[in-house]
Length: 259
Ligand code: SF4
Image 1 (cartoon, rainbow, N blue to C red):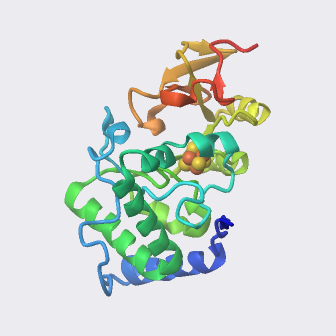
Image 2 (cartoon, rainbow, N blue to C red):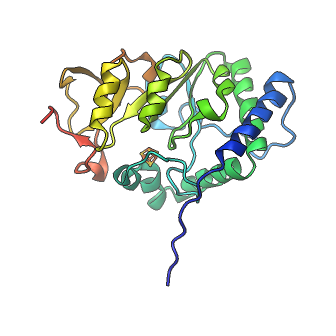
């Protein structure tokens, strides 16, 4: 009989401790990493990801790990069954990009199993990026939902702009009082009341539509497919994304108007 292993919950306290020690060693004390497992960098470069490379006032770098439990570790604690099933990273990995998916899995295991060296490399890369390239934006979760603000809040001092999407209402809510980390709450098909409350408080919500309207309910909708520069969005608006591929009938695909 086939045994299906459940993804392991990451040991966040130990990972956070390692990340903070890495920050002290690399950023505060000016050391280099002891070794480089990823000499060409851990981050996804602007241009390497179609979405991140679209029109943006700043180059966008991103950390692309394996989504949900694909690596054996659960990186999306607030996921819904529908988003997990439809998640681009998982879908892509099962079809034509399996080598890409394996690379994400390897990177995720590096983070989970050797967080001190992972964060030493990552913080060194972010510092080098700032020295060489000037201002840039950082998306900490291209295909995950890790609360970097809890893991190592000082990491948010490194890039010029930090932003993410999240399915956690509480993460999103707390971000409203932060100047250096912009979070867009994602509609999951199950969190409409939280999304409406977040919009009323001035937060932004990402919603997937079959056809993106210009307004939804009483809120303005901006086209999130034109750029991933979420920090430039007006406050209290919906970020409309067009449903692609086989997700058009999923519960998180919203009607053009509220019904
Ligand atoms: S929370 Fe986001 S990254 Fe995680 S499984 Fe859902 S859609 Fe994918």
